[in-house]
Length: 306
Image 1 (cartoon, one colour):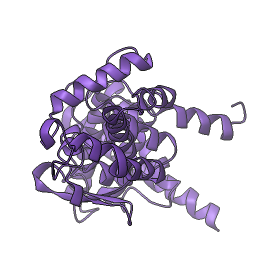
Image 2 (cartoon, one colour):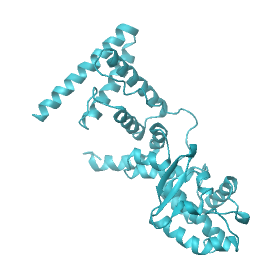
Image 3 (cartoon, one colour):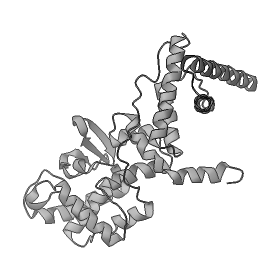
Image 4 (cartoon, one colour):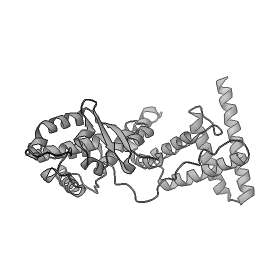
């Protein structure tokens, strides 16, 4: 019975798509190639939804955002995803006009950003080399190592990292209370490795750096003041050279690696969105275009010729 229902649903959705394509041809006189592209986009969406026991008429905003995130993850560029979203908008507005749905699920979906590309993602091997670069036999090197561990464990923005106050850290709960963009607070888990470095840093290197001075900042610079972004960036470049990490590097490289490696290992896109402090899923989706390792693994595991 279930197979028959699935077949009936697939035929009904194909008829829905064909009716939309026919309406496009009559309204806009689009070329056969353009109409074929619309048809292909919608058939792929219908298949993806069907695999999750969803349908075109019942899809909500979250379902369509999930599909757009999937398209990013399999390598579609932001421009291609923007074109796909345009197709979805046109399709669902057509369904709304025809009275087939009560609300347009694409109305609140933000278009993917088409601006400057993100820096390349560091590999896990490169991250390990970078983390190991600071000389932890010195208080300054121990501080830097701890900062890098926290940055990679949490995906914080550099500004969020250098302005962290001691009272934003809960060692007992293993959490950071982060004040992000727009003064939005979020709780970020640290993980065992970062917690271990923090505990040892607070007991040894931090008091040595302060030399009896007081400071509210978790990672103080000179005189106990907050470390500047520029100072941290300078230190990061020094450690990258020492680690043999070549190519472009930015203050957000470890944040980018954090998100990319989470997705490589199967993390849900919405969880990554929450951890990064993104207000919109479309911002998080730009991190998925480099998550190739996970896709190759899945292909090798599940494809008969993988």
